[in-house]
Length: 65
Length: 289
Image (cartoon, rainbow over all chains, first blue to last red):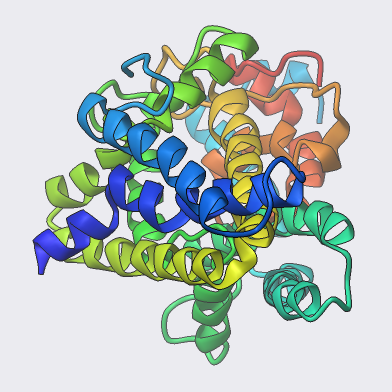
């Protein structure tokens, strides 16, 4: 159960669960990309590396606290 | 009374005079805070269906949400100090209801806030035991920089409250925080993956970020700055805010709150004005207020 909560509250989960769709939907709303698989893929390409960096570095802004 | 009288008084006589003033402002139900806490939370919750059903523009709802999150803490703070009703009083249920409901927009559980806040009062400015010590900073720009660092996943700030709860034998309350935070995360994920990520960003995530920063600045940093002294009359200060009393959330008079936590927020300015000569005599830091 502890592992479940730790996973849910992790930076990587935030990247996949929130940032990925946020980036995809923002790119569509700002008319940079049309709605569809490309927007979803680009959203993932931005969000997931960011989440991996935050997960292992402990910081979203690269600078460690 | 004037300062001449106070200078001739013993510490015990000063205590009596101080408590007499404080007593005048305590034991009053702050109905404004009750309505504020519950009403503010209901408005915040209502924003979601209103925006998702296109009844209200996101750009109108966004500043309202920022206001809601920023205003969500103080009614709970009144409840944490049992100001609405103490244990065993007929209105105790209302005290607990306000405490639990008002901080929903902020995603902080009432029982955790109450337990850790009591430790903050007990150990104010203590380098280890004050669970808000991580919010201290040398200046306003340093505060914002430190806040940015405190928001990072590896920041010690993230575990400050759980460490405090463990230290005080209240570790079971950590579950409240985990469950509330998990509920927030799941709601954000559901909103995002059902096509409402931008709405979730502007209705909750950014308002929460702004509200938390504003609250920590005025409630934790400003009244305790520079935060290097301890003791009843030196751990908190009065200060004159350029933003005024309402915009600084009444925290100019936070010294009164630390001395007499049962005085409602709305009564602290009047209590301060009456108690000021005593506080000056006690050597409190009162700035230009």
